[in-house]
Length: 245
Ligand code: 6PG
Image 1 (spheres, protein in one colour):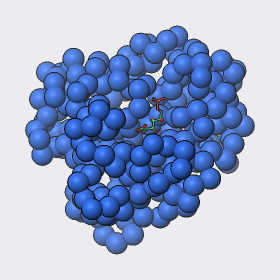
Image 2: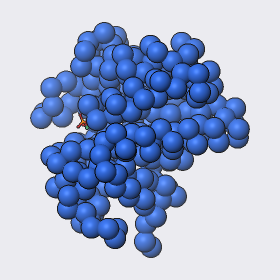
Image 3: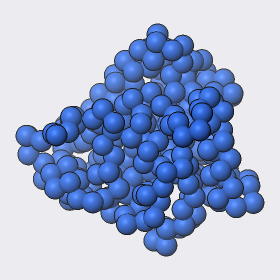
């Protein structure tokens, strides 16, 4: 069966961010209308900073009081550390918009171990989404990035976390600086909308592998249950992609 996958090639990162703001607006309004809330999980990394800043400008426009922000992944370091995703997203978005504190759902990293932090976040998801045993949370939107090695979230190539059936898992991948906590593939693939934002020449080769060659890389394993996966890519990152996908 051919996958339904949307690949949008935008002229530059600013245009991609603006297109994503439009998408966010539509998805959040539809979610609030349907269920009274909009539940989104955000990735860190450098790419989405501009998007966060654009969203922050819409503090009076978007339904922040009904928006719940979760985190796709986190480094096992203090939330005040400048390398933490919580810090990054707080600085660029959360501290500006009128979002109630209780709607922000960080991955708490002050537990004894990274595994315990993962279990705690999993329990938080179970409670928030009122999940019964074996049930998966359904985020309205999950925003992802892609690393040059094809990782997404904190799911790294050939790592055992790719097989994980739990909702959240700890990872200690040797090639990255910190231990991390990440949502797993089943959770990501169950989201209503999954969006990759990818920018810059250095991502062009890996994007070709993921989109055109379906390489066995973590980002390529994100297919979405209903094929609801969109790639927002700037021209530079799209260097090796043809018009037809
Ligand atoms: C993180 C991420 C990670 C990121 C990619 C891309 O917290 O680092 O969740 O998966 O999205 O590494 O990062 P850049 O946007 O910095 O290239």
